[in-house]
Amino acid sequence: MKKLLFGCLLLLVACQTATLPPTPTAASLFPTDTPRPVPSETSTPQPMPTLEPSPTALPRFFVNEFDASLAGWVILQAGNDSVPSIKTEDGALFLQIDSPFTWLYTLYGPEEYADVRIDAQFTNRANVPAAVGLVCRYSDEQGWFEFNASTDGAYNILYGKWLSLGVAEYLPVVNDASSKAIQPSGATQTIGLLCADNALTLYINDTVLRRVDVERFKLKEGKIGLAVSSFQNIPIAVSFDWAKVGEP
Image (tube, rainbow, N blue to C red; front, side):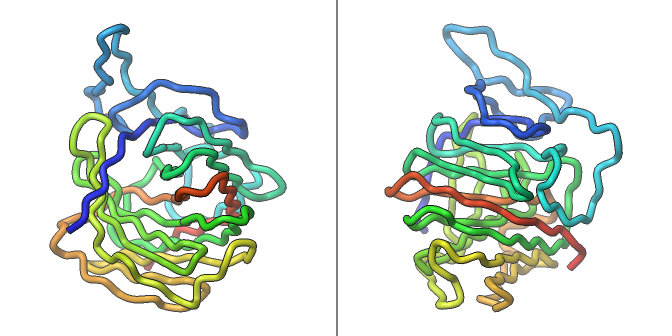
């Protein structure tokens, strides 16, 4: 089975609309009581940042139309240390990547889910192919599932897991698949992922692409999120009009 290895960087605990400044590397998205700082020969390790408190309780199931702050969401980047542009504007979440072969994640921190349905409406605003995806059952220790659909018609399912401090391994669960239901760049479309029991069900534009058994990975619950990634051609710019998290 093919393996993809990437170094990863925690970029921001997202609470405000802004273009991201450079930030230090980190070992864990959602730290436990014992932080695991990145070792350095030239600087003193710093503990992991934590989610900033919200004045009101954040919901478990919701529709986010991105017309307010990104309280509760955390940004993670894999592939290199370039700084992407992330902002909410005109009722949409805009993500721009200027570096090739880069993965950018927006994960919802307050809740963990066993069985869950995630849907999002997005537009690839660049004239080059880009992958847009959804994440479920994310765990720092156990790994996560990731469904990606590219605007060139391809899609895949990846199982990601940290190998060591700052290094992740991606194992393709479904690879080199394609569907005519996936629209090209410029089209507004929807993507969905149902994580229920021991299976993943993939949706594009209200079409079921397939159902995949993932029992062998033993992932029972975790966090959910959105994903965007670039290939060799850049820049890419993707906007999300809304994201919905609901019961299966």
